Image (cartoon, rainbow, N blue to C red; front, top):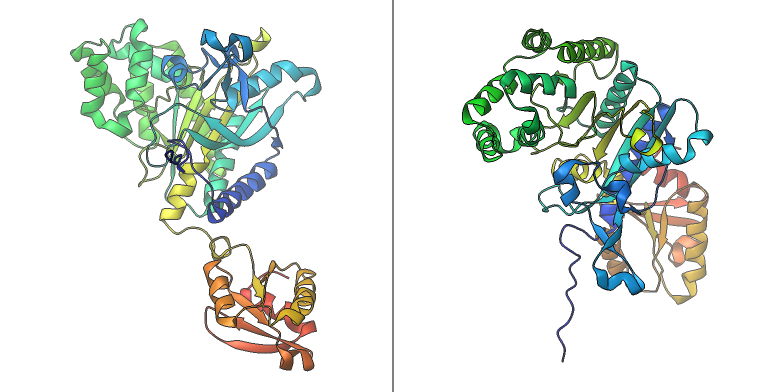
Length: 448
């Protein structure tokens, strides 16, 4: 007998069972609602792109994580790839802007919630297939764009119940200026940024070792860390950056931009969440201005990140177009929310509000009638598919997370009633058919 194939999904991917899908859809619903309140419109792009669309957009390390698709048919034997799975949602957006520029408004704000794929090493909250929730604004260099996205991001996380997150904020030109101040040679800047991007994951000593392993002199690496490691907070950080970069024109301009963003954000929901952090590097190579990441205390890495990328669309269009965007990591949010028991009871308890039991074979039509009456009021109703002992039907409802069951025996039918049993408390109440939906709605605390 041949070996049975493995039933496990590929490493770094997951099957989404009903409870998983409910949690994901709940988060997406909150995200979508906030994004639309801020004027962002929906967009979708294909799961795969031409490989040349993606290569060279994410830096050397990003290129290694792209899932390539081999040529098909007679070209399959070459081992060459002409397509690749979507690595993120930003580069496909840039392609869309270049392709459909004449059909889009001058200032285009879009949100996109779709899966992406990366050939990364799986870890807690990190998968090879995962959803991103992106917002991007195209067409303006104003720092108001960054502030609106910061506020939207904070509204999303607050709406999901997070109260301990911070938004780390930095600027790519400030990074460049600090690297030059520390004595890092220009040809080593990309290596230094990749190493610094790991500071919150491997610590100061780990980054120092990584910097020297990448060919940066130990003394320069030490100077680099002295410049980048956070020693101040709030306005003092901006003052420190201003002092370090006073002789660096681009660096001074970057600090001014950060000051403007922080100032504009003072009247928004992002005001108390922003932390200017000189060590924030963000590894993707296409960022040109402000960069940001969301951090929570009990998660290594971030819940999302983004920044300004004014040159990326020009790679497709032949001229630069201002752009700024942010991506939330849906899976990481769900992991943290699940571990913290942050999901509302309605999300956790299951899809049905009530199960209608089937007393015996002749009562099946009556059970369907009861279910129909309840559904007309917007309730989520499941009918048990066959006649069975009530105990087994109650046990089934409990296993599905359904809190209430409806019972219509001979006595209830004769009286024009239905008995509603609350499986959480064990309490059973007989009500008329006409009052059943209102009773269930009230018992579950649902909005009418």
